[in-house]
Image (tube, rainbow, N blue to C red; front, side, top):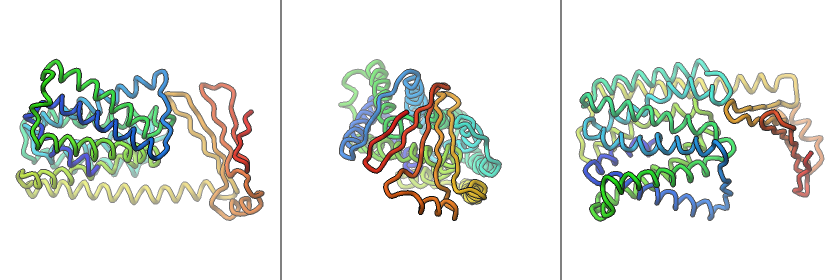
Length: 353
């Protein structure tokens, strides 16, 4: 989120450049970087199938293409802190819709924390330097940033953060290249100066190749609600980046709004730790194992995992298990079909039934 907040100010550098061509170059470079890194690290990139392509295209069209167009256009009418705080409003939406897409219920502590973050964001947006069009573009930034996460939830489980990042970046590159060819001409890249190329490079490496994988990894591990709270870092980074790039310093009341955002983050992270401890205690009480089952409401894929609990009973079970025996058994089914069980033995083979 620090990278995303900084991109608000950096995108302003491209305000008078052939932005569509610049963004096409950015996402092309980011996709190539991701492919090289995936190969060097030995990561397997699975191929999307069926409706997964629709989700990935939706992410690229809204969370990447329209989002960046809104950043560049909005920077002409609003200071970076206003657009950065629009991103910070996203936790309220993720705290409610995210758990529903994940097949769970919203948590009161996280919803309350998200609302505090949103109130702080609204304070900054209301007092920041902007005009009517700036507010409108900030609203577009908000919707697109939310779509960037929410549209990925149905496919993130099977594809993983690397595959989602690779395919959304090349799709966005194709869309931007087509728009740039029509509106800016085939020679638009030659009009980019040194400052524009530096901005494209920063956006490709830090804000795309690195930030995308880190963000989707956080969403996959923490859930949309918890990861969404981290967007509160964006307005702080946006304000700081704006000053570093020569923009005016935010007014005192803007900083007050950022302080409210920080308070919401503290509340949410503290509440998250408390709820996690309570859930762990409830799961491990009176048994040596716990059962985790997740069924995605949109894709229909479900999985159940039986694992030794971290309590004393689980430790006794682990101690009595023969060396090399698997620590968990996973049962997965799709669309209510016949289940498939996989148990890894000491030789590394898999027995399937």
